[in-house]
Image (cartoon, rainbow, N blue to C red; front, side, top):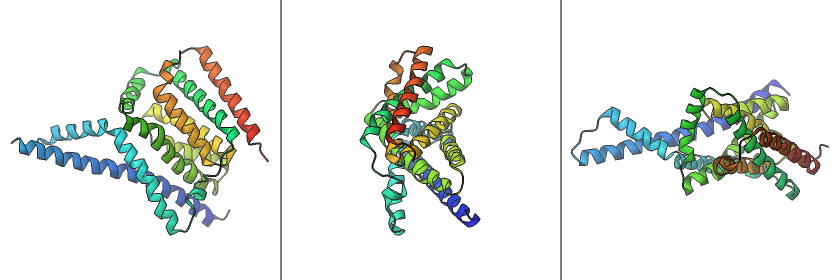
Length: 272
């Protein structure tokens, strides 16, 4: 591939990643401004002069409590803003993100494999000798995502997986793949995906998850497969994995389950 084509592919991948980051930052900043103004008005109406430090802490707490809603809005905006982008270029949205039909026979191994992967990662976090400080940081960072409610569930299980798959597999990975070997494109796109999760333990398992999602996407050739895996993983990991008993045997069975599901997926989508 000519160097010009490489730079174009890398530039496109970077633009899509920056679009995702930019919308996340814009929504958070807009929410912070709105919350600051609203809190200031309430304080003034009660005859209280707002104190900057206390107001900032109040706004930060409100942002954390509404993290699910802000994430939902950010991801919905990301998906919507891509519509005029592709329309202006006279490109098919579905084709650009590789949203091709998925063989029905692939659905059950994808769902079961994602469930097993969620169990394996959860048990690894519980069984590995991870420093207490890192686990405390991880637990604190995860607290905003554990909040009950329809909005949080909708954001975590539906909108976040879809938007992240569209950006990181459907657009970033596919553009990187045009400029470099598949393995390197997989690692780079998964690394970007992981770093944006922020917290160190999140970064570690988001990278593993990114690689797994890319392998599934590459095997099937359709984004539907990685979307199904991502949704199932988030659903099981957020609401059901806590009921799975922790033991080495369950970990081994989970790994075996992943292998069996991958083997079946390979039968449905054999390499040509």
